[in-house]
Image (cartoon, rainbow, N blue to C red; front, side, top):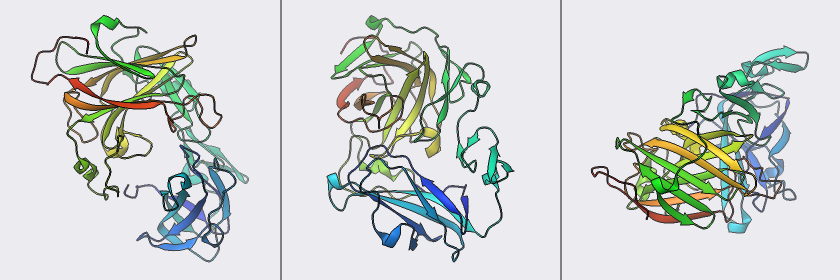
Length: 373
């Protein structure tokens, strides 16, 4: 991705904690590097440029002291993470935009008020220097149509709005098409595969599709699609960054996705995009928007199943979305259970809880009546 518009200021001589989100505990270690404005390496931030953390595959933070002998504006801290199970040369990289500045005192990242050596953070920021931003701080941030829940301590945002049935959206700010937790299976076409059943129909106005995904999990549920005839050419988006390297066309490349979780009888369901085999991001990250027109989710504790139900516009005008029409490559996944690294509602690696199939959706120019497939 290109550089963002926000940079974190780090003071020389100060001890800082670098944190990151890890979706899978890969074999091997990591190293941290400082890059100049042209993204050439200035120096190593871990000892001697060697990989560290080899004895803790789940490590997601590292403490270091910023050297007094360097000032750097519009620079980058890059983490290089090994994945030795896939080969000695296979590595993941992720970056953070930073300025390294002389000591200016405790600024609380511009999102709080100094209180001695600590900070009193403005809502919804948190952290010892107010450097992290949550979606919400209290239920009122969810428009009183949901609750502000703590979801994770290892990914951001750690606190998110979960909505009462009848409302949806990042802040539960949108009214949904239904507050009912249920559906009539006979009204839908259906595809069934190991671990998940997906029901779908085109609504009578021909402008929206309605999907229902039922999965054997208490974690997240994800479904996605792209035209079956898609090629690697779709990865030229976003246009201002180079396409991923490699010759293969992976099942997660260029996928329009809907991902949902349920907690305490409340749901959080959104429109996502997966450019490559990395954690899907909300459409807004890529300049798009959430095109869902309604959503609701529920869990069955007895059967350990999660259901997400959503509506989405059929005709799309952004590269993060694909029309639910024609022959589609359809994928699904759901969260892992029973391992401490994988919390129920964190968007992390799905393991073997995944699959793909070819789905025949109706052409947009035809009148559609629900039928089983």
